[in-house]
Structures are given as structure tokens and as C-alpha cells.
Figure 1 (spheres, rainbow, N blue to C red):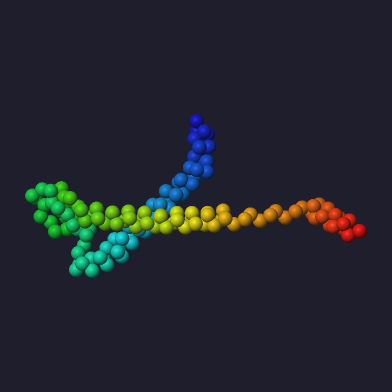
Figure 2: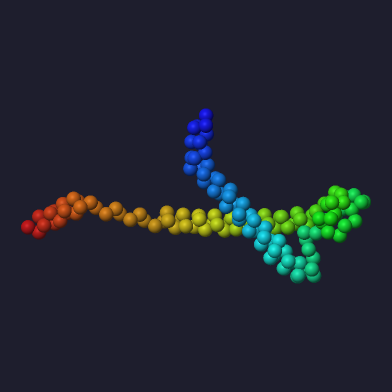
Length: 138
């Protein structure tokens, strides 16, 4: 059973999937940093210093904190600013993946439209062609 599992795990598709998941996680971390460290501060500056990640609605009367982290410690909150930030993350990732797949499809179509190069004839075929041409001249 262990041998069978090892064969399954080492198949090309499983390894490709594992590489894709790892690269996807790293890409997700980059996009998260892009949104939280670059895009959201710019949006906050444009809107007068608003920080979307701290937008929340308290769901209990005991929540009196001014920021989300402290509010979560005090009770239940509806963190809609965090939701907006994560939604923006999703749209950025989806758009980048769209661009990547679009580029891959263009390359694939370009490759399909180019005629395949004729294979070079073997040495024997070249010699026979030369003999044929010489015989035609004679």
C-alpha cells in the first residue's frame, strides 16, 4: 500500500499541483501585501485618512473599542472593512490570473498558426537526391 501511495504521489499531475499550490500561496502573500501596504494606504490618503481594515459594526453593546483588534477582544463585531480589503485582494488576484491565462492563450494560438518546420532529410535521402539530379543532367 505504501508503494502504491508513493507511485500516486510522484505522478506528474500531483507534483505539478503541489508546485502550483506553493506558488499560489506565495503569490497570495504578495497580493495581500500589495493591497494592505500599497493600495489601501493610497485609497486612505485619497479619502482623507480612512483605514478600511478598521471599519466594523459592534454586534454587542459591550464593544467600545476604536480599532478592530481591541473590538474583537471585547465581543462580536461585523468587520466589513476587512471584508472589503479581502474582496479587493480577490479581484487583483483574479485579474492577474486572467492576464496570465490570456497571454498563454495568445502564445498558444501564435504557435498553432506558425507552420511546422519540415524535418531535415537524412543523409541517405540527400545522397539519393544528388544522384537523381546527376542522372537527370546526363
